[in-house]
Image (tube, rainbow, N blue to C red; front, side, top):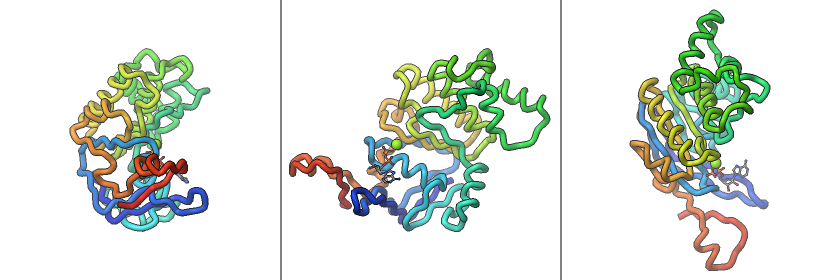
Length: 239
Ligand code: ADP
Ligand code: MG
């Protein structure tokens, strides 16, 4: 489902180029459920932006679902993302003026008669335990419920790959547990591949495959060295 080779990405910070990612080789097979952990600033979101084609790599190759991303234009990557990837974010990003049901409907890219769309949304709401919340606005839902709506929205077009960036980052631990369970359960029943990045080790440990970003990324944060040398600016070193 995902193949990464010799991937490099750096950002310009304080007037100089800082390496963020250097991944010699990494892959995820179709149907795998993978969690990647790493502290804040370790490049987790950047990695998901590269996999989804929001950002371009400086060098190297990423293939998703058999499609090498470097062969696509920006418009091509947008179309690829719409067809291939569902995205769940920490802060849900639901449209506040639309109900739960309308938020899901807005995301549907396929043509179907309204009746069929309604039945499909009903079945999704039921699967995530929100059958009686379809007419609620996001502000009338708990944070965990909002995340459930965001998960439906990400999956309603049945993308082969679901990416989740800190999906439990703004939830209390009990709610977070429920969301992790739901993500895993839906991945098994829908058959998509699931990649979650998180700094929450408890959430990550629930996944059948759990990696630290340093298992794949050769860029290390020089935090310990910075502390002992008394430097205050943030730096990265390449080991
Ligand atoms: P994480 O998601 O693990 O917290 P990020 O991928 O968001 O980490 O960021 C990794 C590093 O790259 C951070 O130091 C961040 O400040 C930097 N960074 C991220 N995006 C940009 C950008 N567009 N321009 C410059 N620096 C960036
Ligand atoms: Mg992040």
